Image (cartoon, rainbow, N blue to C red; front, side, top):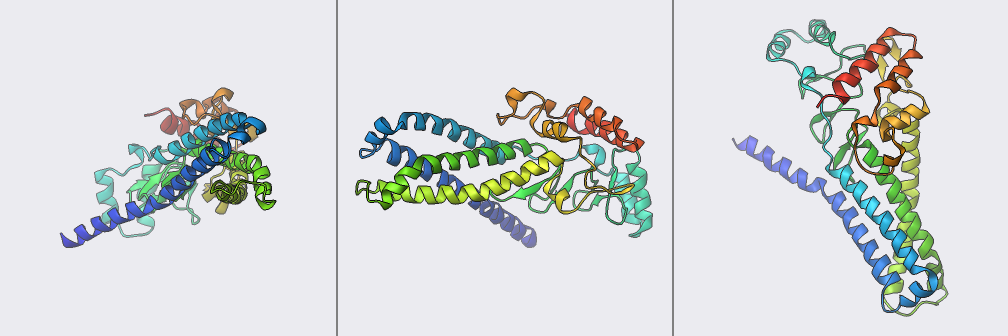
Length: 324
């Protein structure tokens, strides 16, 4: 009881600590809102800036970007990652059979027998069936075990400490929009704060606390813009190639060998696999089952020579995307 209780306390402390980066971002965003809206735009000493410098338009655009940014961030944090279906979990009898066998080829034979009726075409580097000891399941293609969440996550990209969540199939669109809107948010603040930042160094601002908010607002927005731009460009490249961060680091291994472009459907279909088929929903952080279309994947497999790629695309759709 004591070891179990200590482990529970440890896990509880870890869960609290995992929220610290999210809290940090929330505080930064709250301060930026205060500095930009109250100190820069509508403070007592800044009302003149609104009337003479187009501040009303600044505020309208700012709040649109701010709302979309917060919405996308919220969705990325609180959208639950998708886990493999029960078909991929070992049955009680299979677990017993696997435990009785020695480690090695005998266990692989059992796993291969179970996997023959499942749409599993990726392998380990040694060619073995991908099996998770922690979750006791055969890993679907593009699925990986997250050590932080202690779960297997479908189409896992990475575990992001800034959202305290796994980025994968269920929230990758939200993560991309979060990067896009946060970058737009920082760039907008940098651009509209620039002339007041220059006035600060030319001693053209009133001697109030607002000028210090203006100074740090410009510096923080500029620095975040650089880091967000590099991260956003990298993930745009991943979307175009239909790769996850894990697959970019280590190419997936198929039955026929390693293929870094094994999941690519072409630029257009790769993009629509993440953002959906309807343009009007692309900038909105809402998930739709139509994010991945069967006809897109059929078009892809027609262009492939090997038969197993057709089976892979079709069965993957049936088991993962159209089943609740």
